[in-house]
Image (cartoon, rainbow, N blue to C red; front, side, top):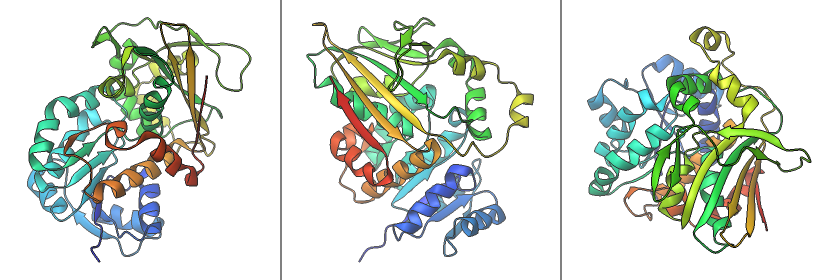
Length: 344
C-alpha cells in the first residue's frame, strides 16, 4: 500500500499543532519543514507525533525547499502574513511536483496565487487550493449552494461572526498588520464582472443568527469575494464585518502586536454567514457553525490535503467549490462538529 506523505511548513505555531495532531490521527507521518530543527522537534513532541520527519529549509532557500518537498504528495503551508511569506513555499511545492494548500486569509495573496501560479501548477500537473480557513472554506462552499436556491445572477454578502468575543493569536494580528492599509480600505468587492475597490459596504447592518437586534457592519476584504465568481452566477459579492471588530483591527501597531499573547483565547466559537439575494426579491441564508477557528482551519486543511493526495482533482489553481462537491465536503466536516444549514 502506498504511504501518503504530507509536508507541513510552519508547524511550530498554534495552528500547526492542530495540523500535526490530525495528520497523526489519520495515520499519516508528517514531514515537518522549517528553518529550526529544534523548534520543529519540540512541536512534534508537543503534538505527540514522535515519529515525524524533520527537514530544515528556510524560506529564503528555494533549492532547499524544493528538496524538502520533492517526495511529498501534498504541502500544507501554515504561515502568518502570506503577502510577505507565502510565495516561496508555494513556488517550491509546484517545482517539487507536490499538490499544495494553505491557510491564507488575504485577498491580495489569494489573487496572486490565481493570477501567477495557476498556469504553473497546471503545467506541473499539480493542484493548488489556497485560502483554506474556517471562513474561506465555509464562505466559498455556502455561496455555491445558497446561490443555487435562487435565480441568478445573485448578490452575495459574507460575514464572520465571533460568537464568544475571544481574541485571536499574535500570528493573526501580524497577518492583519502586514496588509493593514488593505484591511482599512475594505479591499475588493465584485461588481459588474470585475473586482473593484471602495470603502462603503452596500449593506451597513446585519441581523446575525440568534440575534434580534441589528449589528452595524462595514466592508471587509473577505477572500471568497475572489473565488465565488469563479463558479457561481453572481452580480455582486462583498464581505462585511462587525464595525467594532474592524475598529480594533484598524488600531493595530507593532507595539500592540508585540504585547499580544502567542496563543488565542480558548473560546473561539463562530458562525460564517452567507446571504444571497436575487432580483425577484427572494433570499437564502447559509450558515456554518464551528467551535474553534484555528482548530477548524487546520482540520479543513488536512481534509483537503488528504483529498489532494488521491490525485483525482484537475491540475491548476482552484477554489474549494471548484475542486470538490460543496455539500459532500460540508457534510464530511460534521465529524469535527462543524455544521451547516441553509434557510430561505
